Image 1 (cartoon, rainbow, N blue to C red):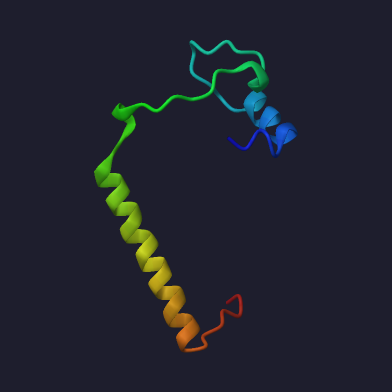
Image 2: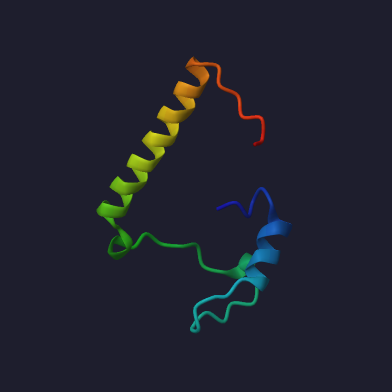
Amino acid sequence: MIHPFMPFLTEELWQRLPRRPEDTTKSIVVAAYPQYDAKMDDPESEAAYELLLGCAKGVRSLMSDYSIKDEGN
């Protein structure tokens, strides 16, 4: 999905990262656009991610409210 904005980066990643064994496409330019697959849905993981994201937002909010700055230590 990022290819229209950063074609050189996505092509480089396409060439270097491992792919599925059955994928013999030579370039991302001619690759099929990904299709939604309901089997890949994982509500439990989504809920865990939302919890983690909420915790991170809460910590950042508290740090902002109390003017806590990280000095890199």
